[in-house]
Length: 301
Image (cartoon, rainbow, N blue to C red; front, side, top):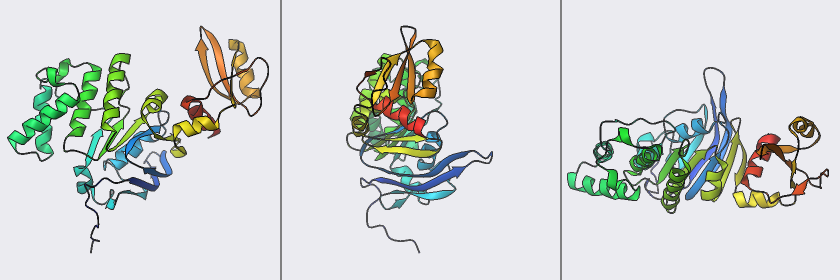
């Protein structure tokens, strides 16, 4: 007999993931004993392509099964009570399709029916509110096939907001957006994340730095770091150095120093180095940021 829940499934909860593992039929171990606690607010899941982010997001979204582990939303068992979870879930996958000949208003109204909003009057008001919130009201009659990349992403968020979700999952939502669209999109996410749980899965460090009060860095299917990004950056204070080197010197420095990243500045490589003491040879101290935390975690792994 199933246990009676003491809390209603729609109450605000924390997402708790314990010992989650997944190996695909081709032998790739996408997740390796992942454990996370994700509270209300914007939560960043940061990692390179192939790190296991999408596998984790699809598992939380009830779209695939892990081999081992548990996921709970408060007292809801995400892996066993999928229908209940889907009532409070909004999901924007990395790749999603639209019907290009339909308008945003018509398509969103159709999705609302699928979400159980059968009252025409109520559905009309909800669709209007969400289109206004995502800054799509003025183009609501326009066909989705004519939308720009940023407009399509905002429509994706609009459909994820249907049903008043308490948990929203966004997988690489700013990939391919131009700077103006990206800025507008991040402002929208910031507003959404004030009162519910929003998981932002991305490989773009800047997105997480601007939005998220808590971040998990994932690499090769494992959680490498989890906590406050500002705290992690502060812990590197006085330990990050940079130096301009010739292109033919980069490899030698990588062999002799803990080089965590390399970027081109005016066509010349600029290396950033982790070191407890000044590494010498013209290296200058710099203020560490989340990007340094990210690259050092991947290097350590």
